[in-house]
Image 1 (tube, rainbow, N blue to C red):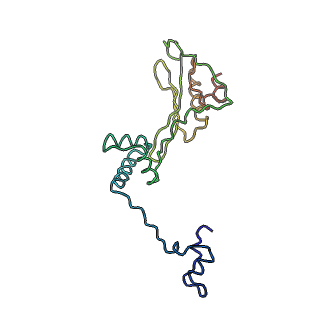
Image 2: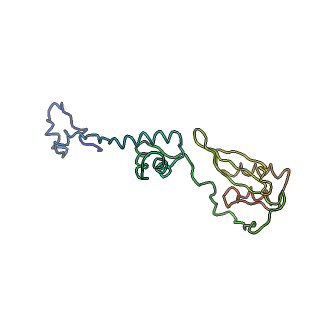
Amino acid sequence: MDNLCEWIEPDHPILSVRQQAVILGLNRSVLYYQPRPKMLSEEQLKLLRLVDEIYTKYPFMGSRQMSDYISRHHSPCKRHEARWAYEKLGLQSVAPGPHTSKPHPENQIYPYLLKDLQIVRPCQVFSTDITYVRMHKGFVYLTAIIDWYSRFVLDWQLSINMEADFCIETLGRVLTSTSCEIFNTDQGAQFASKGFTDLLK
């Protein structure tokens, strides 16, 4: 039973409230206890209003960024205070964080070939990566392939998930019209996947 007090019937036809409390093993005083709601101080209310206002403009901010922002533009604010406000308001940063380059343990790791390399012509080195783009409600992932020499974006694509397909499709389109000597990526699971590396091979 979550709350034995709920079993007490004030208008019971036979048993008094005291008798019911004895049967349930309750002290009668708990039946009349009314917890007082904890009142927030003026400073706490001010902080909650401020955090809510700033978060509406910048929903990607975590508690650390929020405390820094408030300290710079308003008044000193410690991180635990910003964290408290986030919990009280039920807020959470919408930024996905640095999860765009997780390696898969089964994928082969390739050597880094660009150390001390002079990049002197187009189509010598291509490179790709994934980032995210904040939207009004959430975010999408963006992959782009560039030529390191010209910094020209050869192709790009958006995706709502981190599956390798959108990276493979982008690479496939690039390789139908051009090629390079070295293709540079991080060791993210998408770029070390069989579908991606098979296209390059």
